[in-house]
Length: 171
View 1 (cartoon, helix red, strand yellow):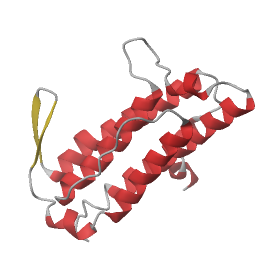
View 2 (spheres, one colour):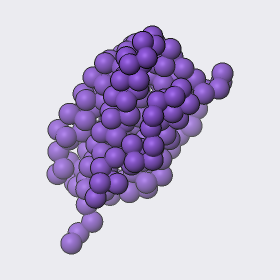
View 3 (cartoon, helix red, strand yellow):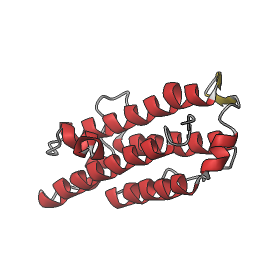
View 4 (cartoon, rainbow, N blue to C red):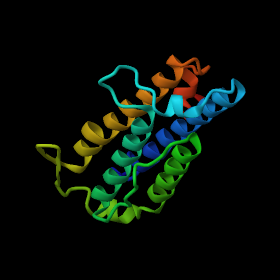
Protein backbone atom coordinates (compact mmCIF):
# COMPACT_ATOMS: atom_id res chain seq x y z
CA UNK A 1 0.00 0.00 0.00
CA UNK A 2 1.52 3.34 -0.99
CA UNK A 3 2.22 5.98 1.62
CA UNK A 4 -0.56 8.58 1.92
CA UNK A 5 0.39 12.00 3.31
CA UNK A 6 -3.31 12.85 3.39
CA UNK A 7 -4.16 9.84 5.57
CA UNK A 8 -1.39 10.56 8.08
CA UNK A 9 -2.38 14.22 8.40
CA UNK A 10 -5.94 15.36 7.70
CA UNK A 11 -7.77 12.71 9.76
CA UNK A 12 -5.32 13.31 12.62
CA UNK A 13 -5.85 17.08 12.43
CA UNK A 14 -9.62 16.64 12.50
CA UNK A 15 -9.40 14.20 15.41
CA UNK A 16 -7.26 16.62 17.40
CA UNK A 17 -9.70 19.47 16.77
CA UNK A 18 -12.63 17.24 17.69
CA UNK A 19 -10.95 16.52 21.02
CA UNK A 20 -10.34 20.26 21.46
CA UNK A 21 -14.04 20.94 20.78
CA UNK A 22 -14.99 18.42 23.48
CA UNK A 23 -12.57 20.01 25.94
CA UNK A 24 -14.06 23.44 25.20
CA UNK A 25 -17.56 22.03 25.73
CA UNK A 26 -16.50 20.85 29.16
CA UNK A 27 -15.12 24.33 29.91
CA UNK A 28 -18.37 25.98 28.83
CA UNK A 29 -20.42 23.55 30.96
CA UNK A 30 -18.18 24.24 33.96
CA UNK A 31 -18.59 28.01 33.74
CA UNK A 32 -22.33 27.72 33.19
CA UNK A 33 -22.91 25.33 36.13
CA UNK A 34 -20.88 27.50 38.48
CA UNK A 35 -22.13 30.85 37.14
CA UNK A 36 -18.58 31.94 36.24
CA UNK A 37 -18.08 34.65 33.63
CA UNK A 38 -16.64 32.63 30.74
CA UNK A 39 -14.42 35.53 29.69
CA UNK A 40 -12.31 34.73 32.75
CA UNK A 41 -11.43 31.37 31.20
CA UNK A 42 -11.21 32.66 27.62
CA UNK A 43 -8.62 35.24 28.70
CA UNK A 44 -6.81 33.08 31.28
CA UNK A 45 -3.07 32.49 30.97
CA UNK A 46 -1.10 29.84 32.83
CA UNK A 47 1.68 32.37 33.37
CA UNK A 48 1.86 36.12 32.64
CA UNK A 49 4.15 35.70 29.62
CA UNK A 50 2.01 32.94 28.09
CA UNK A 51 -0.94 33.53 25.79
CA UNK A 52 -4.59 32.96 26.83
CA UNK A 53 -7.01 30.16 26.06
CA UNK A 54 -8.46 32.07 23.09
CA UNK A 55 -5.02 32.22 21.48
CA UNK A 56 -4.40 28.51 22.08
CA UNK A 57 -7.54 27.64 20.11
CA UNK A 58 -6.70 30.18 17.40
CA UNK A 59 -3.19 28.78 17.04
CA UNK A 60 -4.33 25.14 16.95
CA UNK A 61 -6.78 25.91 14.16
CA UNK A 62 -4.30 28.11 12.30
CA UNK A 63 -1.55 25.49 12.26
CA UNK A 64 -3.77 22.80 10.77
CA UNK A 65 -5.62 24.95 8.24
CA UNK A 66 -2.36 26.46 6.99
CA UNK A 67 -0.71 23.06 7.10
CA UNK A 68 -3.40 21.39 5.04
CA UNK A 69 -3.48 24.24 2.53
CA UNK A 70 0.30 24.28 2.11
CA UNK A 71 0.37 20.52 1.57
CA UNK A 72 -2.43 20.74 -1.01
CA UNK A 73 -1.09 23.93 -2.67
CA UNK A 74 -4.39 25.76 -2.08
CA UNK A 75 -5.42 28.90 -0.22
CA UNK A 76 -6.40 28.68 3.42
CA UNK A 77 -9.25 30.61 5.00
CA UNK A 78 -8.47 33.66 7.10
CA UNK A 79 -10.10 34.19 10.49
CA UNK A 80 -10.16 37.45 12.46
CA UNK A 81 -8.92 36.15 15.85
CA UNK A 82 -11.74 37.93 17.65
CA UNK A 83 -13.32 35.10 19.63
CA UNK A 84 -14.59 36.14 23.06
CA UNK A 85 -16.73 33.18 24.15
CA UNK A 86 -16.72 29.41 24.18
CA UNK A 87 -19.36 29.51 21.42
CA UNK A 88 -17.05 31.67 19.28
CA UNK A 89 -14.15 29.27 19.85
CA UNK A 90 -16.35 26.29 19.00
CA UNK A 91 -17.43 27.99 15.77
CA UNK A 92 -13.80 28.52 14.83
CA UNK A 93 -12.95 24.87 15.50
CA UNK A 94 -15.99 23.72 13.50
CA UNK A 95 -15.14 26.00 10.53
CA UNK A 96 -11.62 24.61 10.54
CA UNK A 97 -12.80 21.00 10.59
CA UNK A 98 -15.13 21.75 7.68
CA UNK A 99 -12.25 23.30 5.77
CA UNK A 100 -10.00 20.32 6.50
CA UNK A 101 -12.68 17.91 5.29
CA UNK A 102 -12.91 19.88 2.05
CA UNK A 103 -9.19 19.68 1.23
CA UNK A 104 -8.86 17.42 -1.81
CA UNK A 105 -6.93 14.27 -0.99
CA UNK A 106 -5.61 14.18 -4.55
CA UNK A 107 -4.05 17.64 -4.14
CA UNK A 108 -2.08 16.55 -1.09
CA UNK A 109 -0.96 13.33 -2.78
CA UNK A 110 0.00 15.22 -5.93
CA UNK A 111 2.21 17.61 -3.93
CA UNK A 112 3.47 15.23 -1.22
CA UNK A 113 7.03 15.32 -2.55
CA UNK A 114 7.12 19.11 -2.98
CA UNK A 115 9.12 21.22 -0.56
CA UNK A 116 7.04 23.34 1.78
CA UNK A 117 8.70 26.71 2.28
CA UNK A 118 7.38 29.47 4.51
CA UNK A 119 8.37 32.15 6.99
CA UNK A 120 7.34 32.20 10.65
CA UNK A 121 8.45 35.32 12.45
CA UNK A 122 12.04 36.05 11.50
CA UNK A 123 12.69 32.42 10.50
CA UNK A 124 12.58 30.76 7.10
CA UNK A 125 11.57 27.11 7.01
CA UNK A 126 11.80 24.41 4.37
CA UNK A 127 10.34 20.95 4.89
CA UNK A 128 9.44 17.91 2.86
CA UNK A 129 5.72 17.12 3.14
CA UNK A 130 6.15 14.34 5.69
CA UNK A 131 8.66 16.29 7.78
CA UNK A 132 6.32 19.27 7.69
CA UNK A 133 3.47 17.21 9.14
CA UNK A 134 5.59 15.36 11.71
CA UNK A 135 7.99 18.14 12.75
CA UNK A 136 5.85 21.27 12.46
CA UNK A 137 2.09 20.89 12.18
CA UNK A 138 1.37 17.99 14.54
CA UNK A 139 3.70 19.16 17.34
CA UNK A 140 2.21 22.66 17.18
CA UNK A 141 -1.35 21.32 17.08
CA UNK A 142 -0.81 19.20 20.17
CA UNK A 143 1.14 21.90 22.00
CA UNK A 144 -1.79 24.31 21.72
CA UNK A 145 -4.44 21.68 22.49
CA UNK A 146 -2.43 20.64 25.55
CA UNK A 147 -2.10 24.23 26.70
CA UNK A 148 -5.86 24.81 26.27
CA UNK A 149 -6.51 21.61 28.24
CA UNK A 150 -4.11 22.74 30.97
CA UNK A 151 -5.70 26.19 31.25
CA UNK A 152 -9.13 24.65 31.76
CA UNK A 153 -7.85 21.92 34.08
CA UNK A 154 -5.99 24.52 36.15
CA UNK A 155 -9.25 26.39 36.56
CA UNK A 156 -11.07 23.38 37.95
CA UNK A 157 -12.69 21.90 34.86
CA UNK A 158 -13.05 18.18 35.50
CA UNK A 159 -10.91 16.88 32.65
CA UNK A 160 -8.83 13.75 32.49
CA UNK A 161 -6.47 12.00 30.14
CA UNK A 162 -9.29 10.35 28.21
CA UNK A 163 -10.76 13.79 27.47
CA UNK A 164 -7.45 14.73 25.91
CA UNK A 165 -7.11 11.49 23.97
CA UNK A 166 -10.75 11.45 22.85
CA UNK A 167 -11.57 9.01 20.06
CA UNK A 168 -8.03 7.60 20.21
CA UNK A 169 -8.81 6.17 23.64
CA UNK A 170 -12.15 4.78 22.48
CA UNK A 171 -10.46 2.59 19.88
